[in-house]
Length: 111
Image (cartoon, rainbow, N blue to C red; front, side):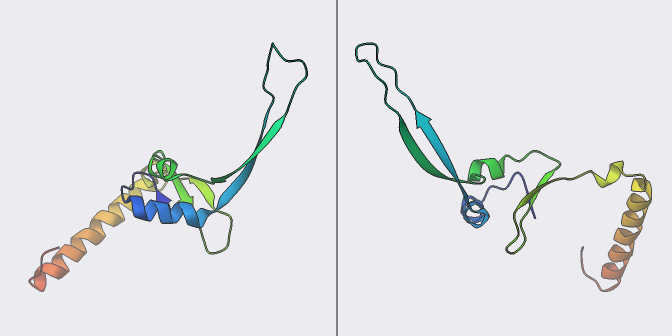
């Protein structure tokens, strides 16, 4: 799972390569007023599914899930605070953090 905002270009480059590539075909038909007739050329390009820059700039609330040999998927991630049970989750999270702080304080360690 990858979220936007990462700054490690090497890591993002690895992700870019792991996601794979897509092929794109471009057809060009140049226009020439001095010469009659037309010509067509085709260009084949191999492009990454997502570039390092696109991975880095993914907006908040979007995640990229890539798992083993499965096709990667962009996910829309709803904030847990906006869920119906968000208040309950927030209270449980706060209680757990207090428990952990008390536990580590009893052992003489900082959290």
